[in-house]
Length: 328
Image 1: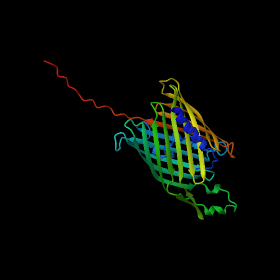
Image 2: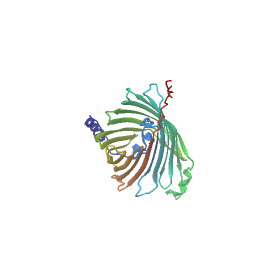
Image 3: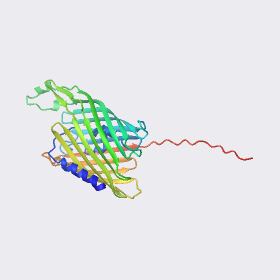
């Protein structure tokens, strides 16, 4: 059974090996910001509340701090559903992407809602639908930093006012617990369902078109101390395409330990080799990623650092008082 699912991931990875181009905001460590990939991830975990934060510095060795993206998400599952096995998830997300010497910033804020439909009483198979809605805007921070062919006259056509609109997304996801130790998950998310027109110039506009995210990941126990975690992500936006595959190994110091060392490799097709590392300890996950460019921009390098915390709040059981009457 494990081999079957691993072969599925390998097949998907071979399928996406085609030339890739630039793309919407993306993270190598998408597992540290899953709700941005698919709103169906909202509340899809074992716990009471989750906080995820990540920071990406694109082309850090060439243009440090000029292409950067911080993002943070807060989400929680709620025991509300049509059946007692079902639940809903609610969350909020904020990100800000900054690009270039002109400090062109893209700021997004959204809320997300998901419904997790358990297909059996043990919740081994769960089908999830997710929705997101909010706002996104772009703004030029420093017009004077741009260089124009007409010796500066082009500045008159640029605007420093923010421009944007309402942003909607949706997603589906299927999660299956193969056995007590293994699981697989596949999903489809859509961003920018409605086109967004940005008017940053006086003589034209830029349109943000729909993006489709296809993803799959799993966790398979190799032995009591080691797990393998493969992942596939495909992003399609008009004629642009981005795809990458990853494989991580998670190693416990002892079979009973709450401390795991995580490391692995990935490949973003036609663009970069990914080096992954991190530590899991109880409710915390810390991760980093290093991308080494293999495209024409090589040796462009990128760096990510992220953190996830899952809090668990358990209700104290109500114990009925029992009064013992001594016999007389």
